[in-house]
Image 1 (cartoon, rainbow, N blue to C red):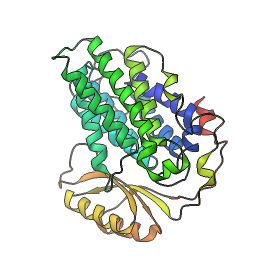
Image 2: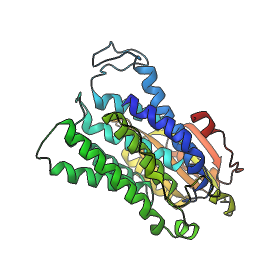
Image 3: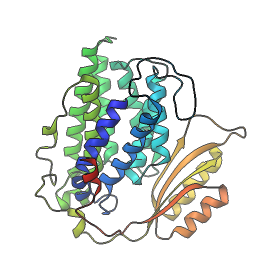
Image 4: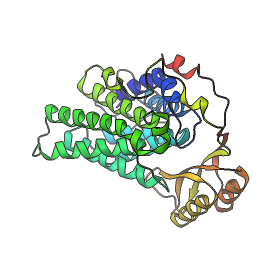
Length: 339
């Protein structure tokens, strides 16, 4: 898991510029690559801090910044997912954080990844990601997650319980191939992408992340040819988003502790105020009063009403308000850092 997220951090750093260049949905703010990179980096660094470089399948005393069980795949991935959720950036980063946290659940208590566990993890993750959005849209990274999960389940079903590394490799191959096909389809699923003749940026980012998982588990090189021919993805292609009209409004994000009823109320009221509403539970456990921590994301014309609604229900933390119409610099520095 640590090797996977490390590979994903590097890959997304190297590809952030091209992902930003084709990012035009749901808003043409050219930051999907940056957001995914920063979110995956948070997940990877959480494991770097928690797991010693020479750690093997052992137990270590639980202490600040460390995991109690390094031989529990689910616990390790959950630790990374929580860090990603706390520091998630934008739509794409928030959805990846949801994906990571949900994928950890079927893996809890297992010291080894198998084809059946991976299929269950990918399926749980794609369902949770779809449900996190108030208004999920096909043709985005959600469709790529779903395709990978369905393909993994189909191949695993034909293995008759085979838990060999070969069976795991077959499932990983199928998931990546299905993700690629889903990315290609995104162009025809959204009018904005079809008009610009590009594939979805978040979908490509998810494809890269899944290929990094395959590479880390099987010990093989990344399949750079996966990106060949994707519309808008050649280096000489223009930064599509720079020609789009500026998007009005802001992106509001925060973490807040709410009861399930208050969380449902908040989602409904944010739906009335804006769009791109994402609400996902942070951590599996409730506090003594039965409240859970939630990561909240919304696009609104004006932050004041949204923040007013949020604060009427609880005390938010890690509040961020970002203009959707940011200055666009095609030479962005994130990719250079990743390289």
